[in-house]
Image: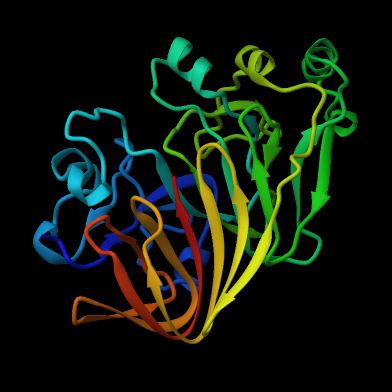
Length: 318
């Protein structure tokens, strides 16, 4: 029986808007100075994370999901894809204004298993940084009219953000991460993005990026509604737990460890990302050192574990 956490190695993605903060903040060995994303807990075929410890070392999370269903408390004949994807994004420049489809649209139009509902925990934000979150159109017809006219200043809804902010982004929400922001994103395991607007910028070869205006108009919710999410705070020994969101596809928490606590796994499996500090995790008489930038899964085969130290985590499960 696999009686320890599953530690994962990030997969890096070059982006036109990427930078170097994944190296300076997390000491990752990034491939270049346009590294926009680290896929830190991923079983997606476009960037599956590699397991670094235990008897599955060298395999990917996708391999483990498909070959070892007992680790995730799933039926052997369950052929669904791994449900979640966790990323860290470094937006040195503005991301494109974009939108993602829901499950039904993804399955019917893109032949993909999941749409993309996501959420962001802001790890760092420069002064004055802001995101695009929603739009001001009152109907899909008005949204289409303003988007096709390029009336972006009147159409797009912009809000300032700072470190520690949390934003829940259901499918169908127009959004963009602005320059100077680093986020941890928890999302459905999907790589479907429809670009609405990309600031008319070009790559090194002078090419603009493809836009997907028709698809965007089809899937965008109008009028925009900011989700009403219920958050809660609980404390257990040295661990303060803030529930950030509990919705259809995932539950996400912020954990602040200041001392020690014993935990019982309360989901089929749990995803953890260390976003600050250091700690030790002990389970089944095995102790593991945790530091900022570590990402791991508590599998279904581990029922209890003990944490000690001073660290912050973003934690999630389906």
